[in-house]
Length: 250
Length: 269
Image 1 (spheres, rainbow over the protein chains, first blue to last red):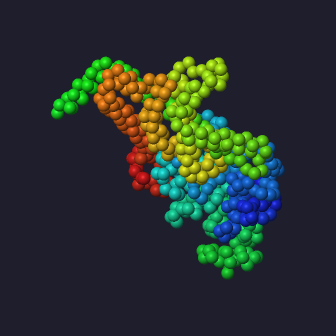
Image 2: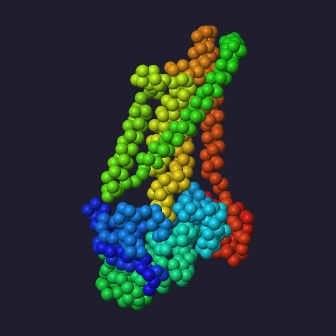
Image 3: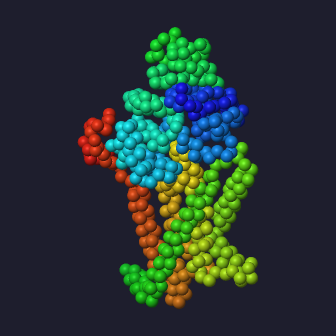
């Protein structure tokens, strides 16, 4: 276990009277690959969006290296640049080429000069296998390619943690593999990742921590063997039984 | 045939005496419409950015107060200048300023006054167009920009407004063409644009219809040219429909790229 990067304490979120997250507690340490699983509407995506402050939590604390980022003194944009995010719907900037997408943040947020930014962007675009496409625009490439560019864009900011919000859910089945491959390689290289996913195979093979959410609370957490291989709660078992390709589940 | 020959000879008479004045009028009209539309767009974009600064319930009171104040001011500006005739606004501002300041502040040139009136009028319309343009952009674009640490202004400047601009180009074109025609009301503060020349010419010659014909053709030429140039600009903004694959190193080739040799354009839309 490396040093703690994120510590989430008693986090809650309500949209009006609809309570989506209740008293969430968990920790992300350096090098952790945490898979967050659970049924639709269980609050997985909201949790991720709260961590990146795209939603404002209604209670609790998010400690980033021991500092609560929910107080008003936090420079939110600066914090976000340390916590990358990959979206289900890619969210590449449509008015820019693939290369510009990966360069703009480095230049405007990290204040790098163009030469360094391009060099760095190319490093990550090559890593996700999208270097040949630097001149293409988002509308000209496929979903899997878009998601790989989105990962390169997030990596180019050199974040400490990378959040993935169902990165393969909007993809055609034959494109899921190429994105999961990239993510698996990142995990192998020691990237700290927090992944909301329905890919049980990925959760089982790649992650070292699995969090099962249900109705806005964390019902179970532990190693993949514990949560996926040998779930304690009936609800977890029911959820997992819907994924036929996962062995060892009755 | 006789009547057409008459018309042509009348127009000839008009042009020989007032040709320079007509041309000067066209120039003034185009210059005023173009600069006022540009300034109006800037006002519109500024209002658009200011209006969309997000705030939340738990933000400090002062921040919320100022943001609400800004929105209220913009709202009033838009409603007042969109809701009153430009001809009245011209009179109101041109004669109102000296009236209220005991002639301490007055316009030294009708050019400045006309530019001010047409600009803020266009700005009021553009503020709403820009707001519409910003709303039309997928919220995911804003989230993507925020997620890599951009501030509201950076997000607007580099991601949202360039896309909004493309979407509201037809609106900007509308405004420009409306301005070419509607600057004619600036004769009220004796600005000599194209239509003012008509008033001067017919006052001396009584050739109402021939002069009106010249005006019609003149205005139509100006607006058609504008439409054509705008279309060209829109096409340019859309960028190329194809792109070039760049393979410096065979090893970086990945699944899906093998079919395309280096440098070949791939059409996919």
